[in-house]
Picture: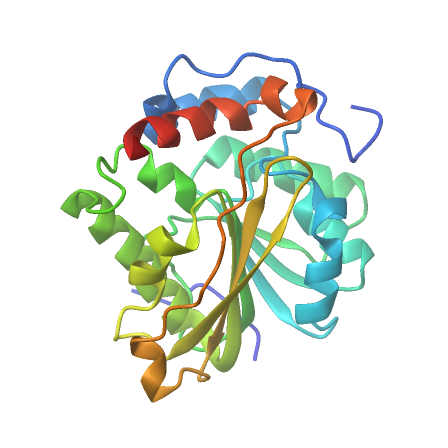
Length: 263
């Protein structure tokens, strides 16, 4: 079944703006106008490393026949990399009309006509139920946490937005679909939200990165076990030991804001 909206730099693996300075505060990421202005002038930026760093995890979890929904595509080249790996049934969404227009033009110029790009809000997904095999997000949900306050007890407004996103993802996933989330968020902060009793998916995760690790969560719909509600996966959080290229990237601004809340 085709998913459709319901009624009612020279090196593609490098960031051309790697050394650019981000906004003065991570709270700026909550302003839609900021993204429209940014996407108007910025051609490409990859949050949380480029595809080559987690390609092995994608290939282990996504079939080439899968229908994929990407939340918050921005100006990332992720959908293009998935397409090159043989995954062609891809729908990208972004809240910014500027990002959508520029992404559509870029994909058409490269001949990637099968990839669909839709202006939509991840808090209110405009798609029919149970129509995607995979929903994917890379750093998009992290924006919701920039003003969460205490990470152990986030503000209710933040929780409501996160749960609205997860409700929508769970709804549009097929009965055996998977949700992949790439994030800064450590398991002890994400598990209470991901594993809310209303969801019937299981949770596992991997890490990737050089000095600093990012988390690659895999939530498998229909695979949750009864005793998984109390299951507490043992893990050792990786030490924060960034290399110079990570210190210079905009990810570091985002990370330091989160760390400040955790202290």
